[in-house]
Structure formats: structure tokens, C-alpha cells
Length: 268
Image (tube, rainbow, N blue to C red):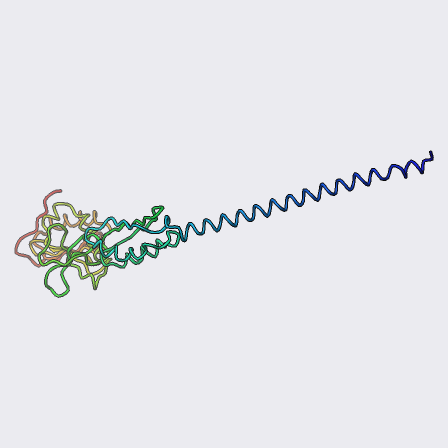
């Protein structure tokens, strides 16, 4: 047999092998496509199922509202705001929006709203707490205010549970109130015992009225410890002065116009 005939006779088996390989390759491609389609359909079905579960399932709707932290704030007012969410899907609840609506209540300082899956909304209220009594604007009674100067309660008698500060919050603002509170916190017992009142017209305009009618110009709450030391020295040197100015402790001043009773500050 010639070389040419040998080459010719071996060609058909190679073509048959090549054809079988192509068919197997095509089958694998079709199989991969079918798996991809099946995976895509399964994912779509899963997404639809989750969407239905989140939006329409009776097990993931707001069913209960829990309110905590209310003493002065009427819990019913909070429920009236938040209960509007009952029956809505939990996933559509906007905790920040709910908190903003509750925070609009006058005595609410801060609000935290959280989801408690599967069906509870929890609202935690931080109330405004009175830290001082200030004169009422009409001159009758007192206003109990928090550190922001927001009125928490109006009372007719001067309270004993919070300090009285002669501060017009409408004029001096929260800064004046905070400065007066900070000065009071820095005063030693010896000065507190002789106080008649503390007032402020601004952050830098704090003053003290002593029980012998002497007046102390304090200035800001800064360097209060140094101002206390300077005030002690001034009182020791001039106990019958009507005015002590320690607003600039490195350059204090005294008005020597006498008062009825000399001022004395005990140690401590």
C-alpha cells in the first residue's frame, strides 16, 4: 500500500473524533446555560418571595409600640404619634422620621426609635429636666427650665429642689443660664451659705447678690476658683464694701460704699 493511500485511509477516524468532541462541548455549553437560567429563575423567585414577606406578610407588620422614659411627657401623646405606624410593613418604618415627630413635643429633649423584629417599634424618650428656677416673665411665679432654657413647668412658689437664678432667658439666652449654673457649681459652701441669688445677663455677665445686700460682679464662669480666692481676700480687707468686682481676677475692684452688715466668708 502506498504512503498516499495510508494517509487517505486514516483521515475518516480523525474527523469522527473531532465531531464527537464538538458535540460533547456543545452539550456542556447547553448544560451550563440551563444551570444559569435555573439559578437566575431561582434567585428571582427568592427575591419575589422575600419582597412579599417583607411588604405583605402578616408576620412582619408593625403590631405593637413600646414607649419608655416618660414621666412629665404624656405617654398617650407619644402613642398618638407612633401608633399611626401600626399595620405598616416594618421595612417601611423610618425610625428617624418617627423620632423627629415625637421630639416636637414640648418636654421632649431627645428620642431614640428602634425596630424590634418581627413586629415591635420601641420609642425611648429623654425628657427635659429642670435645673433651675427663673422669674416668670409676668413677674408672678417661677419657671422651671432645663439647661437649654426651655420651660419644663410653671410654679407659683419658689421651689427648693432646684436653685433660683435671676436670669431672663429671653434676653440672655441659654448661654447666660449655663454660665450662672456653672458659677454656682464652682462656688464653695462658704459663699453659697451667704448667697441671696445668682443672676446673669449673658455668658460673661454673671453676678452674685449676697445676704447682706453686697453685690459681686463675677463675669464669666472661667477661672472661678481664682475668683473665689480673690473674693475672700477682698472681703477680708473690706468687709463692709457694697460691691466686689472679680470679673478680672488679676485686677479686682471694690466699691467702699458701706452696707449695713459686713460680709464675712467662713473657711471652706
